[in-house]
Length: 306
Image (cartoon, rainbow, N blue to C red; front, side, top):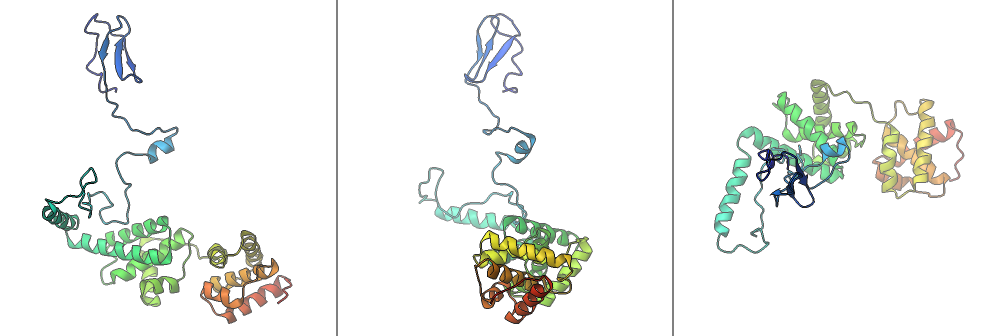
């Protein structure tokens, strides 16, 4: 509205300069003579309201948000696959023309080899993340890691799939949504050693310093998969904290220790799960769970009735 009345310096009737904007009526009124100087004004501002600076930064009216999961960050226009007009009616006469436009639009979006490789890599990354059931923030973080690797030329001489999988593994650890290398390798259908080797190289070159995962990080996922209550999960975390204080977890795989703590907690609180069930969810063997839970029970003085 400010821009609309910039040219209205004075009332054309009395020459008065005391003009008032009536936003409810969309009018500009002269306070001295009452003349309606302008009417039916269009408010070009946003249709939303913001009550603090954070809301002001987040809200926008410019379409879908930018995403790193698309090679052009989702900023280009996409012609919908449905042959419908703006009223939702079927388009019958110009279907061939729409088909040609759609084909050329897809070609224009990917203009060179770099964009083509990036589009393929991000599609592969999203596919693996979908198989693992990872949330959107992990996917976005992985896409940022992969883009940084491309900018530094770390892709040359390595497979796109391997670098994408290693970026996803790094993002999982960075966002505290841990997945093991075996899980990533199985979802990506790649060799575990290749992903681990590529991850170490990318992390070193990009300066990514991540703390090692702890057994506590795996408790919510394992507990949810086993349909255990929050009380059992809290008990397992309590057991693991005591074990970490006494350094019982050092030198042992975090998934095995976490699975053992969950098994102990389920038995203690009457929501018993078999060692086979826990082993299947955690991706370890029954022998590993048996050895770990015996160590924890003995060192922490926990009595378990099997």
